[in-house]
Amino acid sequence: MPELPEVETIRRHLEAGVLGRRIVAARTLRGDLRRPFPPDLAKRIQGRRIELLDRRAKYLIVRLDHELALLIHLGMSGRILIGSTGDAIAKHVHFILDLDDGRRIALQDPRRFGLVDLVPTAALDAHPLLRALGPEPLAATLTGAALANALKGSKTSIKAALLDQRRIAGLGNIYVCEALFRSGISPKRAAGTVSGDRARKLVAAIKAVLKDAIAAGGSTLRDHRLPSGELGYFQHHFQVYDREGQPCPGCDCKGGIKRLVQGGRSTFYCAKRQR
Image (cartoon, rainbow, N blue to C red; front, side, top):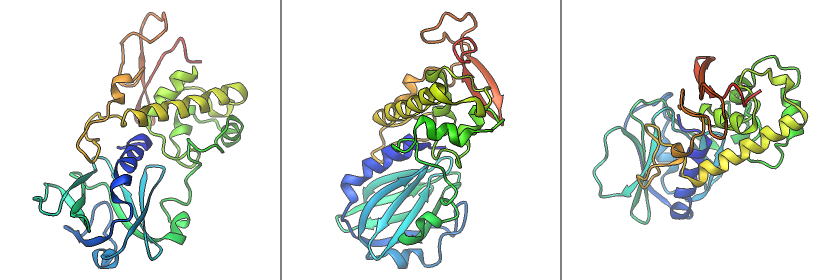
């Protein structure tokens, strides 16, 4: 599933080319993805101008004029494609926007776990998919003290707590594993014990990992590609994720990187360095 860096790189890639453009035609090529498309979606957005591309957690938000916004989630395998209105429609494309400069923006989703919703801009924060989300991890408001407060009293593992979108929005398995490694915190540690200097180090590591990943275009393990078709390459800089048994960077531990399963997901870590 695309995580925050992948969605942010897509947003940035699209932004320069589509801001101010008008939607001259829109189409849905099936009735639903994870959930049904909004009724009369194509008709309601035809003629609207794209005013802003935004992101909340793992959601792409396309703000339109007339106080409307498209809320898009890419699910497990979704991609945003850029082409021209004369192009043949690619396989597994389910939603199309044709713009006034001849470009076409398409949502391709082979597994159909994504979604598209149309929301009044003023109602975005109250949307059922957004209203319970925690703070953005790259926001200045996320400090060590703020994180420690959010984790206070929690007996769940820090790994599980960081994946809880109600505590911090947008973090997924890859970047939580990498941030915990950089901060030297064991994924098994009780979340409520992460406070003080430990919390400050973790917040710094989260922000650094996300910024590094965004600069690298995200991580392409299977499906993620930029709208241009380019691959992300942060996967070449993983220190622990998916590196079970390999040498631990900067560490003299004997067994290399370990793997355990937490909440049905693989966790990669160094048993010596992370406490």
